Length: 419
Image (cartoon, rainbow, N blue to C red; front, side):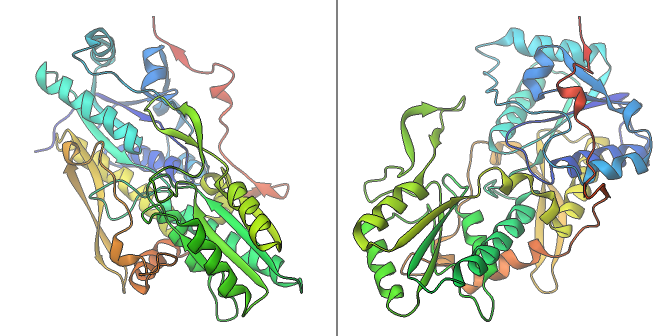
């Protein structure tokens, strides 16, 4: 049954991606097409910003489908982000009362929250509070993460574009490296704490003339430094230039992050990771004595709209629209998901899934998609990855650089402040 709720609100949180604004665009387009909600509000800086009283009237800013199109191709987050761990309602009921009083004041019947693992924890907690207090507010999660580590959904919006950028970067690094006639090792550090999906995607760079990356190391497999050196020695006997792709989250045989600082953690208790590439650069330099360079792709992996996947952006818009459909049907406590029907031809469908079976869980690369030697991925994994990077969007340019939607409101206080 389709329910009419007067207004809705949407928020974004966590790490940015190329496609999270495309999902926001999809929500806005879905509402314009269905006319289900009168007004769409936007949280500024996620749930934390809303608790600080910051929000926008998105219906005034995006009153036509055409205005949404520029948003689709804009990286990062139009609404701003936060890294705020929402406490449980049992420990901080006053926070929930404040939020739901705002929802009641603005006649908000549906909350759409776009984000990754930690954001889905927020969706779970808001849903739990609404249910236990009998609040007539539906909570819908929309996935986002370049890490591709949310369970149930086949993949996540933002991953395909990050994968395309990584593969393209590896191919270009290979061209730069191969022109020199001296033995060398190039180590490319790629994002991924516990899941190696992004590093696995580096294999898409391989061509008929370039085997790079020659070695791929994922956090799903314990990293043996001695075996790593032996792998390099064997390859250097048959070719001069070796390129290695590895995840920032690889662990040694004792289970310790190679890149973890001594005691730095974020709001969710995750170890701050940095420098595994440099660590191994120093190791190779000391043990093998050849030319070594480490490259950290860093935030470009999540912001490179100029190298985005058309498939990724189109799916991100579509999943935002589907979230509106679920909200209109009165569904709650769900995350919208991709369901893969086939690889070739590539086809997916959309579905909602209980947030209780997604939040605080993690999807890693399956063991059978990693080679027995632990330093590469299988053809089956490549078949999974390949459809996600297909197509090149037409991105508007102005004066030679991409034209993106302005986020000036995030640093000029161009938002409302609730009393």
